[in-house]
Image (cartoon, rainbow, N blue to C red; front, side, top):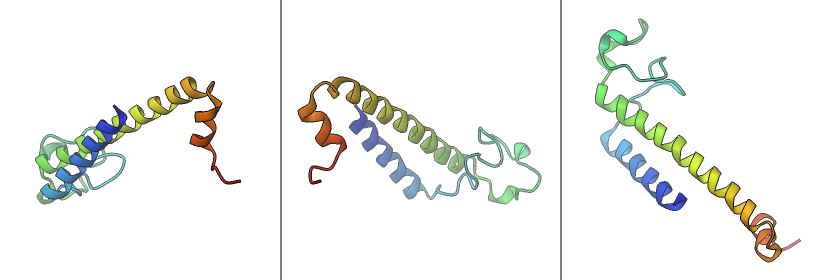
Length: 102
């Protein structure tokens, strides 16, 4: 499952690149100084230029960020479950976490 979600993240990153929305949210980790992107020009902070705001590009970039967090959590859970399950099997546990040539 983690591999499938990672490939979907690569796909959504491609959508961000193709749509040109890489700077749809110009700051990190917030978007226009907010945790949730603004839905109208009236919600922009006073120091931002309204001409540079594009609702669609901001939400494409923001959804890619959220999907990235979701993917990271899935990978973390998969790693924890792998350690829990395979820690008892020494033949598969040690080569996965330590280099084979010491």
